[in-house]
Image 1 (spheres, rainbow over the protein chains, first blue to last red):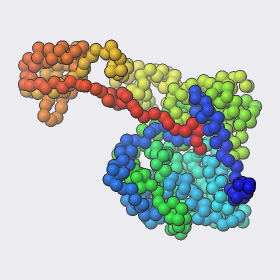
Image 2: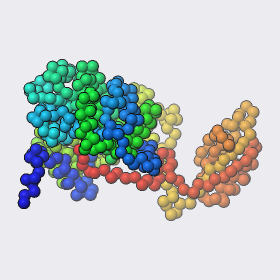
Image 3: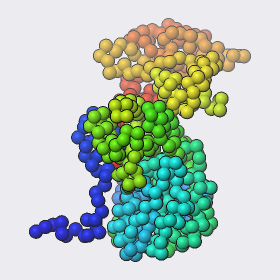
Image 4: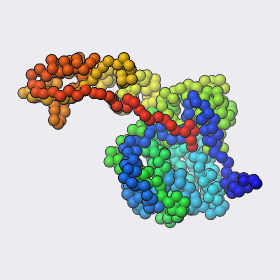
Length: 391
Length: 165
């Protein structure tokens, strides 16, 4: 009996994540330095952890409303308003198991078989598979280093067809570190509205932005009614393991998302919701001091790695958001995958090849600077040796 | 930018006094020269007083230091208030810190010495006899958990998966 035949064709057709391969190699090596980690190096602030423990101690171990607790949804509404000027009714917000679930729900809620969804490339690894699992067709729109990996209206125009239903706007971006200003986002409006696209704006890195301000594309009145904003607690509050995110948007779409969520997930973990409520309340009453402290710490490391890479001769575009840098490795004359493979075997530094984020990532690698300065220094020293030996 | 970089440099040195100018300049996107002059200005204005290590002597078997917190009640003096009494106390070599408190006592004095006996001796020979000191309560520190914002024995470690999306 060939069990492979039981696997659905559209699932079998999606290749395994390119990240997985490097995870396997890197986890074998005990003394490797990893710049491959896609999560904060801060442990969740104690007030947040303490609230989760308190919630357990007090027996809050039951289901919540499918939508999330009313308190948390109200606080999310307040947060989106004070922080990004987005105004929602709590009934237009659903709390999810990480922003990842929110994305998956959004895709499943809107995609009919064969519908196309536009995705900038290179991009976060889940978008394309998410669209395909939902029966849709993922269409990449290449972005490039010369344009700071920002999405341009022409690229949308070029990719759009009569089957295009939605577009993912993922800024600040993983893996490139690109961020888009309000003006740059504004230039996308016309083509989005003209082609009647739904916008899925993944803003999970909205708090980690440097030198510019984060604006949501939903803040434009013509985009707002056709936009689902997705955000979460993992990156801003160092809460990855809590698995807590949310989506806010038009009633019809959010209700459809909740319909799937209620049958598949029921609700986000109750203690995580309590912790998320504390995170928002505490930061809003202290002027976002804790978030700002973490942001500043990433910013210093960002400047450090940005200058270091340029010093060792790997030119790179200056990242403006998230905690990734995406150096150009073309001068070493080998494909990304080979570069990263040899780098980990010969110098014991783990980075993720750009191609793990789509073909558009060829010629680059993703380095996470959510690591101590000491680690970053040592890693850069080893990368320099490798580059010197190979150029 | 002038004042900004000073504060940033101060933060970075407070975090780790061993950072060199090159590292600081790279973290701030400034030149080494700018960092050097910021440090010079901070030292000049006594915003940076000293470069020290945060130590935990408890992990050493040969540790021979004892620390105590002394709650001191005083009668404030005309014209000088508490300042003159504080000065008389902080000038002693053994005294690590002196703060004026609001509450049931006036001055919190931290002292370090080689053994308990010499601490008691210091209290009744030097401190309690100062004119204006009305009472003292000596509290010996048994174990330190956190000092200068540093958790001395942390149970938290980086257990992130090595490569994640």
